[in-house]
Length: 262
Ligand code: SAM
Image 1 (cartoon, rainbow, N blue to C red):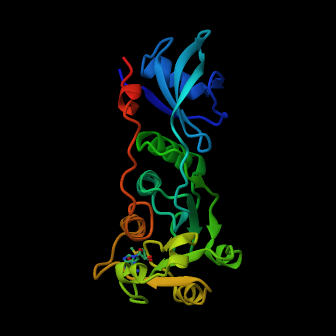
Image 2 (image 1 turned 120 degrees about the horizontal axis):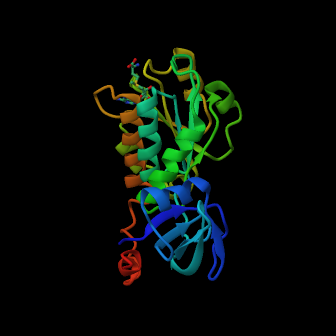
Image 3 (image 1 turned 60 degrees about the vertical axis):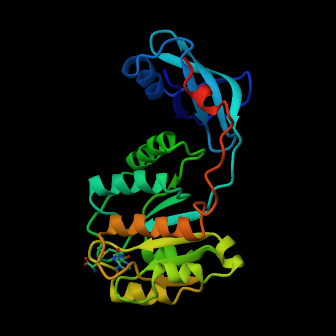
């Protein structure tokens, strides 16, 4: 039976007991029907990944007895996705897929044409945690509260480059733009901005184009849905300047066996 992979908040080191949340304990005990000693793989975004064993406590609770590290923590690309929220099913999809694609921060961005009023951040975060567990990431993206586009740009962090997807033809093809970057630009922190179903308003396009470290790009001749555009842009970014350029890291030879613990 393969090890269940879980994100925990606790610090991880050999020999400690890591607390599991109530929902995690319920899921392990009653959904996945795991018992005492069941194999776990834990990660917290700081200490790498650790092999652990489930230890049931009473009728509901459970903790993890942490044994040994299976993977060192690695630096991950510093790329934000600033996206205008779309309707529920597709915003969950963006959170899940952007997590698999290695995003560091999910920043919902309210624009003039954004139809969605409230964004359920807790649900987005739950989608991101589940996707991080599945995709074998060693971290979970930070999911931030929604912010108005104008305020976001007014408080934009110095030095963070902004890749703005402009469907009105305001920039060169994304591949050409990213491939032409110098090393300093490649190593900089980045963000990708994607507009809403109704596109950026004229005044927003003007504001974005005036940003200091902005790079406006096109995503081809077709108009992509906001969720498609977000993931396409992120995939291009990862493949040209992100961590898709490095070969898939070799996992320790016993990694698989430590996962498929019988
Ligand atoms: N204004 C159109 C509309 O009303 O449907 C397009 C909006 S599009 C669905 C949402 C966002 O995806 C755009 O604001 C842009 O950020 C991005 N996008 C979609 N297609 C694109 C393209 N071909 N080039 C650049 N960005 C694109």
